[in-house]
Image 1: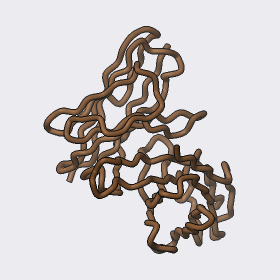
Image 2: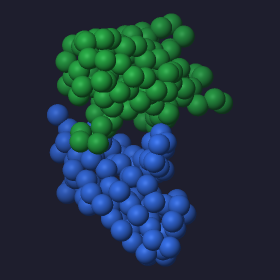
Image 3: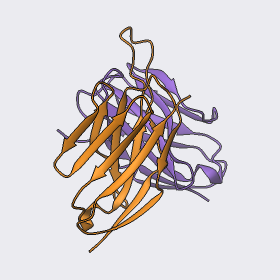
Image 4: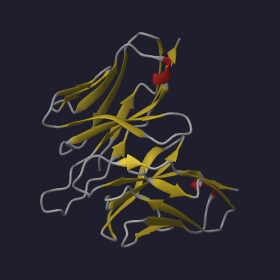
Length: 113
Length: 118
């Protein structure tokens, strides 16, 4: 089975712009979670989607949003980018929210200038 | 919400020695505790996990122990090798309930940089 894939792998944006990141889960996995990883804050949960609905949300401002499509692929969007949004954005998939084990994608490295 | 504390933040050992990383959690309803290994520039990879109905789990050189009363769990790596060098993260989750109305999120510790010297 192919693993979790994320596109693009690297992205450079400037302050004020917006960005959309994509995540394709493992085949058969319907739950997708997003995390932000920074050296200072570590791995922080953004949100989880299942059946095209957001099921859980972390403590991030409304500039961070996401969605999930009927094929379980997910996108996250960050609007009005700030320098502090520079991070590695990881998505992880699992079969469903009641399944414990989740698998991470390779991440998208976002740099905001 | 859940809070996970991980110690130490860095750990340096000689090849062949054992390494122990400890985590404490705050939410007594947490019942799933995975450990991830992240090599430089790579994705976090699940190396072992334990559920609250088990006190210890072992997989070759890696073991995890859980003390529910004290709300802490530990990763033990024996006979360390240079390829064990990486950042290790612990995490905790309150599992989704049977009704599916509670969807637990994974809360991670801050990570431990493990360096194994040849």
